[in-house]
Image 1 (cartoon, rainbow over the protein chains, first blue to last red):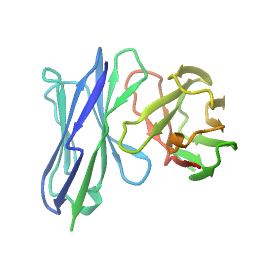
Image 2: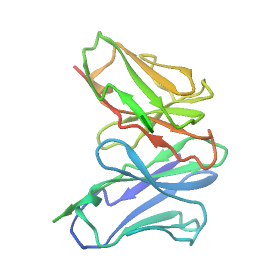
Image 3: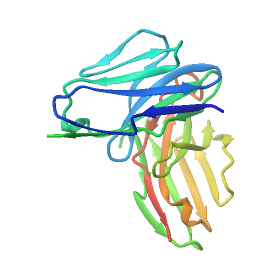
Amino acid sequence: EDKVVQSPLSLVVHEGDTVTLNCSYEVTNFRSLLWYKQEKKAPTFLFMLTSSGIEKKSGRLSSILDKKELFSILNITATQTGDSAVYLCAVEMDSSYKLIFGSGTRLLVRP
Amino acid sequence: ETGVTQTPRHLVMGMTNKKSLKCEQHLGHNAMYWYKQSAKKPLELMFVYSLEERVENNSVPSRFSPECPNSSHLFLHLHTLQPEDSALYLCASSQTLAGANVLTFGAGSRLTVL
């Protein structure tokens, strides 16, 4: 059965801390892995990863994919209270429009 | 209006009611989706439409009935729902049906079934 597992389920940090969120997957015919941030309601797109070892970066956020070990990490440096959200990992399979989502990691950044 | 707009944002209904959720996308996308998000569970794909044709019905009970009259609008008709159907219903759209499938989500409709 195709599945995506995120860890930890929740995380509380203080502003300025660095956090690492994990996403592991077991799917057939992997195509890409995507990260979304869900603050209030609508998940917003962060990164799409298709190749191993190539870091994607946007400001304080970065992500990398390991297709051999079947996982991805999302790093957030110098966290701010505005980073508080649920971070969703999803995997797209080849020749399919379906995204398999993980349960998400709930991040709370305290002032 | 830009992006993906969903109405209503909140809906409370009894088990015998009939209601509809509406989704409109202003992005010129060709594919639209309904997802269900329940507490502490992953997003579940319900329906997919490509160019107004339904291409996926992910084992969803018949009390949920989708409608896609054109590529910009998507409805989810609800009737005789159960309390366990209470959830956040998210609409999304994408430029293509498959490949580089970056979804743009709406803010969701929070449904409570009494």
